[in-house]
Length: 303
Length: 293
Image (cartoon, rainbow over all chains, first blue to last red; front, side):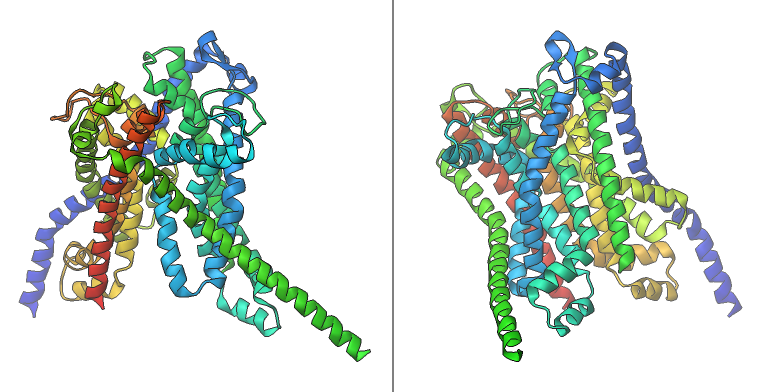
């Protein structure tokens, strides 16, 4: 008895250095993520600061004239592009996504759901450059021009539609998760009072899952804001405030790709401007994600 | 009086039933829009691109003459990226997941790391491109190399791999750990010999799905310096490279219909690569399901 105990004690002692080493190695793996965030902040901040030495922050954030060649960096034109695409995409993905979620969570039988969910996941897995191709070769020529023949080949409507399709699965699946975690007893209670399926879905489940649904929509919005390729391809490269959906605009992301893909020389103002835009984008998505997480937390607390 | 009330109720029932129907039809219709969009997208691409795919297309280099253009360098580049990103991201991602799920104490540092990973997962991919440009391309002077692209994509997929691996580890019942430790295994042995083997299929599935996301990414590669036009296939880590999504973007931007068709063909090849990866993930998942049953 005594001997065994000593031996075990010895064994675990011998193993301790290895244990500790592995633990430290694993900790470093996890800690790397903090370094990545540090790297992002460093990368963005360094060039953003030097950019703002050349360009007045006030003229950057408050002016709507983006013409880098002539030295005008008024970001509002690009912010408008990003905002109009995100709102347009939300107009597509919001109603469709929530309706899909209600259908999958409340109406569809489990077998149908098992088929539909993976297919929607495929839609989410299609590379965004492919959505750009789709906008240019189907949405604009076959859909938009059927309604309005004068539509330009580069227009923000087609970009908003394909970005909407791209974020639709995110909105649908997160909203569905929220609805499915509404306790069945609530539904049964409502049915017991004589409510119809529609009433149960619309008056009981949807309100109970509301903060989850809002979180899904905000997260989808944040995806849309950061979306790059579909927008760069479909919406063209004309920074302007264009309310007409058939006109070309440019988003912050599309401009970053345009400049980085061409050879803007390191250290030039144009080069600095993509980091200033990156910082702006980073802060916007961070804010949206924060709000979304807050909503999810509220939802989790309820049930 | 009573009859009036009954008839009223009946009336409202009919109306309610009708709206019930309408809404149900609307919900099904909305669900179908997403599915239909996918079908139309695939058909559009296939109709334009399928005829273009042949051996010369796969083996040729980029060219300004559409008939002679091919995707060999970007295809090789994408396969290189896939290998390198797997090599870099898998050990680190799984290591981080094991730490957070099995070893991490419940303290401030852990919760900072966890929040941080959740935030990183939601950072737009183009921001990772800027990170790659500033750190790998410039500060570490790797230039327009494969290594720059691979490291950029690695940082992009790490949060995805960590999050899905943690889920796989969490799905292993606590009793397995306790059982192993009751038999005298150290914590490390319990994780290494009992938890990890049963979590491997889940980890693999999540990792492959994450990687297939990364392989389709265009923006971070473009920003961090992938070239659309390379006259050779890369054969070491510091060579310039192209990748399928980058090549597709280059072709899609050209107005001539011939280049649009080439883009469609390249999209088909890219989707083929992604489909292969996803099928492997599904295969692993199915095999695992059968085993546990």
